[in-house]
Image (cartoon, rainbow, N blue to C red; front, side):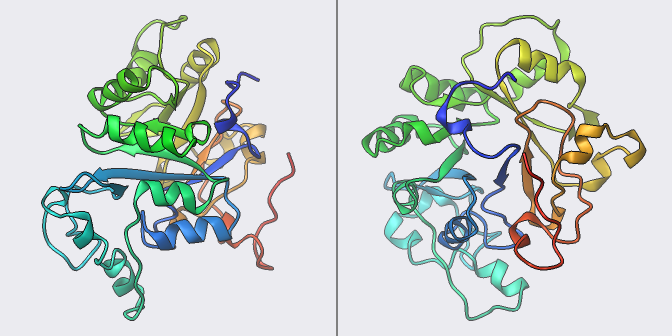
Length: 287
């Protein structure tokens, strides 16, 4: 076992971290999603961060409100007072025929306070937020239950320079490229985890070399994926893969493997982990 000794990584293995709160079941990155995660007993929550015009950090993925709400415009042009009045799940509810339902965006500080046992994977979606985010996390004494990530090396480096390693983080495309293409050896990295797609634009990222790189550098390996066509046929699966709990892709739930093997979201279950209490659902495996 090569797990890094941080409280954030505690929990039943493999860690299952709902993507944006389980965005095919509830509106993504919303108060409704946070309530859902809490009610279903998940230990971790992956979400994205943006900053309003007046400097409030809140949960949201896109640089605009167009895709998920009935409001048009860029996030940077709205003050928090206006954002807080938007129905953050408008498009989701409309697609599901739930036209009378509403939910709101939620600030990072409020999300951290909502469930003080919940651990957060915070994905930085814009630059210039690092100092403010760090201030919120430290002021709420939440640094042990937060991991900060970003696809952007610039954003992650900005955060690492502010926090001086006091909040754990996961690697960007830069660290994934090092693991994928450079010789396998011990390297001086400032991150504690590597988040990697199984496939990326036709290129298979997950491999034995990736697992060995993480083991050698004492990194936790988090594999994320959503699409069934990314995976090999069942005849190619190793025994330990078949032991991993299967999660329906409709839930967009990421299977974060603590063992570093080839486990992943197999996409075969008719019912997902969040439905496990229902009679027809597969019983979760015992670890």
